[in-house]
Image (cartoon, rainbow, N blue to C red; front, side, top):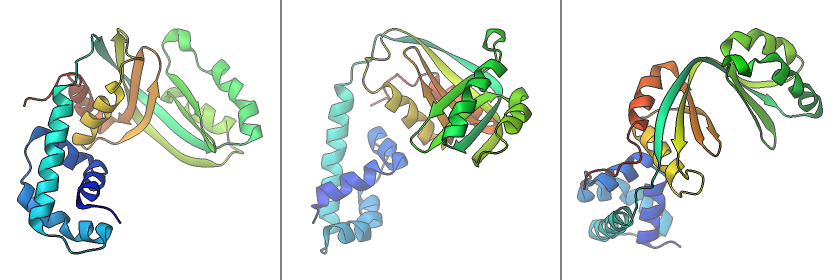
Length: 220
C-alpha cells in the first residue's frame, strides 16, 4: 500500500489546478488535507490523521519550491502568432486512409500561408487544416470513419529563437499555463522551433495572454 506522502503526490500531480496553486503558495493545507482525507485513506488502506496529511503537503510544497528555485530560465526568445479558421478532424487509421493522405498535401497551398498539420498515431490520424478545405477533406475521406471533427478553431503558435528543442520543461510550462486557465487543447504540434496549440476561438485570447510570459517564473 502507498504511504501518505506518495498518495499526496499522486493526487496533486493528477490535478493541475492544485499543483499550480501549491507552486504559487495559495493553498490552505489544513482545508485541503480534510478534502483529500477520504481519497488518501482509500489509497493507503488505513485511517490517516489530518495532521499527517498536512505534514505531507508541506513537505511536497517545499520540494516544489526547491525545484522551482533551481529552475534556470532558458536563453530563449519567442514570439506568438495566431491563425484563425482551423478545421480539425480525427479519423480511424487504416491502409486506405494512409494511401489517401498524400492527396491532402497536394490540396493545401502551404506557399499561400494555409495551415496544415497531419499527425499519425497508432490507431488514428489527426488533420488540422485551414477551414476553407473542410468540405474537400470531408469529401476526400467520406468512406473513412470519422472519430471527431471540429471547426472554428485557432492555432496559437510560439515561435522560438534559441535552443528550444534541447531545453527541458518548456512544453510542460506552456501546458501548465493553459491548464491553469482551464483552456482545452485540441492539438499540440511541436517542431524544432515552434510549439502550436489548437484551441477553440473562445479560448484563443486567453491562450495568447497565458503564453505571452509562460517562461517567466511565478512570483515567490
